[in-house]
Image (cartoon, rainbow, N blue to C red):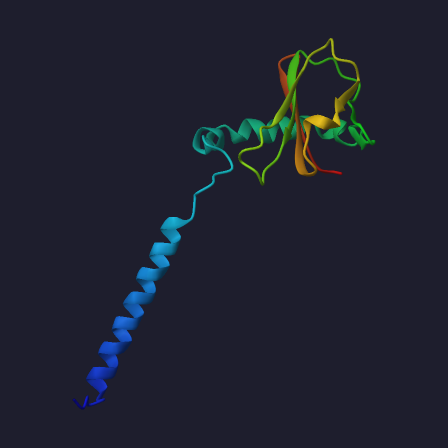
Length: 147
């Protein structure tokens, strides 16, 4: 059998190859897991204006917040505040299965907070410090790499 390679045959082969390529891309795209940074991103997105206000409130404290590492411990020097309540969170964005480390913050917590290093894996973390004082919110975020 002898096939004539005219322009109609070539266009048909090109369309078939194009459709099969698109179907291959769709298949590989549906096989990749969808990992969101936050499960409930929409309500958090609506409340983000309050987070922006908290960040602006914490600008005077940002430079006085010091984070240091030693062989077995992590040290966090909190500015001289008397928080009503709050949290210190070590967030690991690149691993969904690693649980975030959260330490509650209150007026009873000393200015220097010490964390044992065995609670953490080596790598990149985002240190999120949020607190309330006299009805006003504060929020500081630092990027740290634990060794």
